[in-house]
Length: 79
Image 1: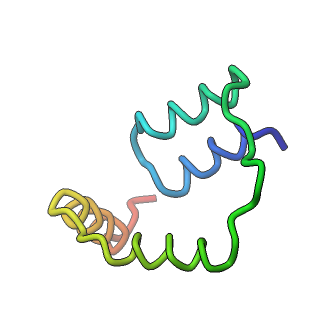
Image 2: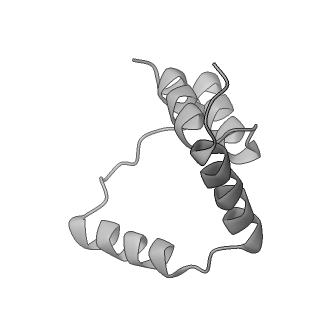
């Protein structure tokens, strides 16, 4: 599976609208300017990155978007 296909699947799972960040990564894969790192991330580096990510505060915009998704998911479909 190509990196671009993988990113499209990720976009479908997590991003309901266009994302400049994912577009940038996808373009870099397409253009060949994004390369794998010379050295993979160590377990300690990965653990540190996860801790930093989890400690970052959640924005009001993100909370509102998540709340809308929960409300939409809880409504019965009119099929």
